[in-house]
Image 1 (cartoon, rainbow, N blue to C red):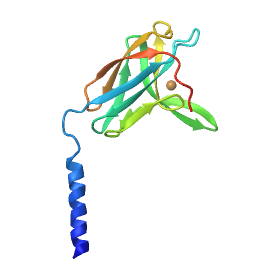
Image 2 (image 1 turned 30 degrees about the horizontal axis):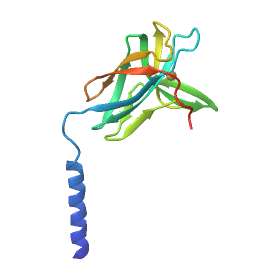
Image 3 (image 1 turned 135 degrees about the horizontal axis):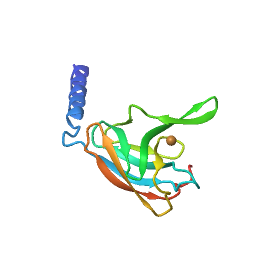
Image 4 (image 1 turned 90 degrees about the horizontal axis):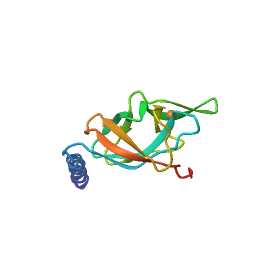
Length: 148
Ligand SMILES: [Cu+2]
């Protein structure tokens, strides 16, 4: 009897847990947006930031007026070589969990840059999500802290 009661309580708890998921408008908080200065003569650079979605969401695309093309990239290892490629289905954002795009991992790739990016510049980025409204941010240009 005790065991039965206990499992009934656990079931109720699980149900309560699910009901506690916020049902308000989907939002995504963006922090620590940073783009690397462009290497000499290159028209390509990487940007990093941290995304926290209020509900399960997905970063589907990125745009910037300073770049002809912006993609969400992932890093992978192939035959011992680091490679990067586009995340064609976007980047999954679990609810309430901070997802970092950081050196050595996922990043935003800006290509066909219309001007060089120097330390201290601001880069406007528009992030588009599956559920949340698009977010406009300004990333600061600078060197990311060395990966630990
Ligand atoms: Cu890349």
